Every structure is written in structure tokens, then in C-alpha cells.
Length: 362
Ligand SMILES: Cc1cc2nc3c(=O)[nH]c(=O)nc-3n(C[C@H](O)[C@H](O)[C@H](O)COP(=O)(O)OP(=O)(O)OC[C@H]3O[C@@H](n4cnc5c(N)ncnc54)[C@H](O)[C@@H]3O)c2cc1C
Image (cartoon, rainbow, N blue to C red; front, side):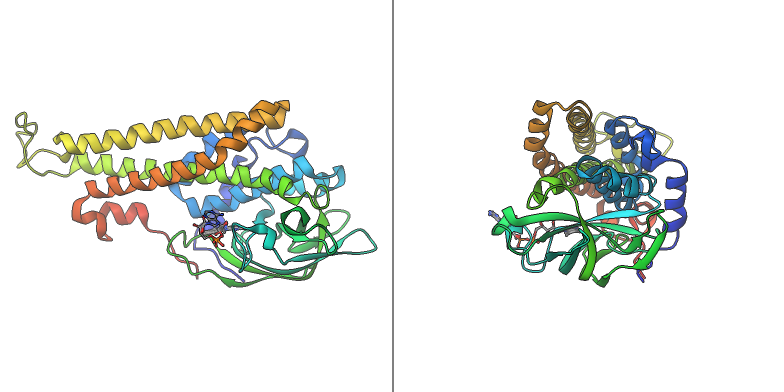
């Protein structure tokens, strides 16, 4: 059993109960049917507040979208209401110990059964939210190869593999043959369980067409990558807000243009030109990144809701840029914000500790 940090379950319950996970979930599956753009905007403060916690619902949303676009009517009816509400959570399983970028090397196999299901066997690593104690079922979307299919990436198919099998009336059945083998010991994001997942003849259901798994998985990955881009600047926004408050509060030196705080022993940091430059750098990046991400989300809406092929081509091209640029630059902005705290930026106390501390998984 993987236990999430104290308070995670209560916070997740509040997010679920408030309907925050289902803003753009279709009304027929219990959501509000609003644009994905609205979901993206609502996500920002949650990611700034606790990125690790928000990843559980972010991956679930990606699984929801992949099934909504590529699933059969029966699959949609089975999985979407509970994924939309986050009563069940979702994951994406691509990476294996010997293959990350080059997924054509994948070894996980899916053996067809007479009843139309598949038996999935293999090991996936680095699986975000792979196991935890906040939902009674976890729906894994797993890439695997059907024996006898094309070589390399063209032989990869996508499967729905639940932790708990689901009965026809959508009640939970027996435990499926999938288990978390270990937690990755990461440098950060300790509040999100990054898991080694072992599949041992687990029951799985083909999602979309056989051997077209990458196409279906890209629906989920594109959303996940836009979400990672948002993480880059949502962290930068949190760092900026902390740095701004500190710069207004901390008294050091006098302004070059004359005393600004005659009642105090010194002026606040924010009077110094280089501090102002740094804060403005951060603020302008955050605002532009927010606009870029919203634009990306609106392209996803146009593609998914209006069938706009040009928007689909545009977002496919720019998704890696949104992810790569906004995370690299967001990190740089966090370092700039950290510098405003001076030496205190490197010490776990005061304002920095309160804003950055992330509980460990126990
Ligand atoms: C915190 C975290 C969460 C994750 N969550 C998930 C998840 O939920 N599901 C999942 O499936 N995976 C997940 N991953 C795995 C992630 O997607 C992989 O780490 C990523 O795909 C890279 O694979 P790799 O680590 O095997 O690196 P490799 O593929 O071994 O690549 C190593 C380096 O070589 C570079 N490289 C590789 N090929 C080329 C090339 N042709 N040209 C130039 N450079 C190249 C890569 O960019 C990289 O810098 C997660 C990883 C982390 C760290």
C-alpha cells in the first residue's frame, strides 16, 4: 500500500466534492461541459499550491480524454463517469527500464484471449500516481505489443488495465494482476508516488485500434505535456508571489534615489533597481506563459470539440515547445525568485520553508 502524505486525501476529497476535476467533463458523464481552457485556468492555483497533489487529478483527466476520444461507447460508459469525478484515478504507462524515448523497444506484451480481452505482462517504471490510497480504483492506460504485430513503434497498442476489475454494473470485482513493485526515490515532487508497476497477466482491454497505440496515447500525452508546461510557470508564479512579498518586507540598504522608508532603519528590498528588474522578469514570463498555455488549451478545444484539423496540427507541433520552454524558463525564474531571499533562499526556515515544504511519502 502506498500512503500519500497526511492531508492529501482530505484535500483531494474537497477538490472532487467541489466538482473541480470535472469542469470540462462532458455533461453526459457527470461534468459541467465547459471548455478545456476553463479546466486549465482553474488548474493554475492548484498546481501553484501543491503540484504533487494536483498530478493525481491531472493524469486522471488525461486518461478521461484518451478514453473519450478513442473508446467504444461501452468503454466510455464504464470508465468515464468515475474518471471524470476522480472517484477513480488514471495513469499513463509508457516507460520501461530499457526504453524511455525510444518506445519501439518496448517489451510489455498483450496476449489476445478468446473473450476479446488481453493478458498484459511486463514492467513499467516512473509511473506517476501509479499507486496510492486516495481512490478505490486506478485505471492504467498501458502501451504494449500484441505478439505477431509489426516491429518497433508500429506494433504498439494501447490498453485499459484497471487495478480492480469492474463488474457489468460498474461495481468493483476482483483484484487485477497489476501491482506497484517499488517507489522511485526522486530528487523532488516527493508527494507524488512515482511507481514501478508490474503487470502479471493482468486483464486489459484494447483502446482504439490495434497497433495504433501511439496515436491514442498521444491524446493523453499532449494533455499531460501541456500540463507539465503549466507546472513550469505555476511554480514560477508561486515563487514570484513569495519573492514579491519578501522584497516588500525585508529592509536592507537605502534606495539610490533617496530614502523611501524614513521611519525605518533601511528601505525594503523592492526599492533596488536590480530587485525590481528580477521581479519584472518573473512577472512578465509568468503572464506570457499563462497566455501561451491558454492559447494551447484553446487549440485543444478547437481540435476536440470542433474537429478543427489545423488547430490539431498546430497544437501537435507546439506542445513539446510549451512543455520544454515553459519548464526550462520557469525553473530559471524560480532561481531568480530564490535569489531575492539572499542566503535565506537556501535555508529551510521562515517564508521559504512555509511555501516550499513538501511532505514525504511514508
Ligand atoms: C518525475 C517523473 C515522472 C514520470 N512520469 C511518467 C509517467 O507517468 N508515465 C511514463 O510512462 N513515464 C513517466 N516518466 C518517464 C519519462 O517520460 C522518461 O523519463 C522520458 O520519456 C525519458 O526516458 P528515459 O528516462 O529512459 O531517457 P532516455 O530515453 O534514456 O534518454 C536519455 C537522454 O537522451 C536524450 N535522447 C534520447 N534519444 C535521443 C535522440 N534520438 N536524440 C537526441 N537526444 C536523445 C533524451 O532527451 C535524454 O536527455 C516520468 C519521469 C519522471 C522523472
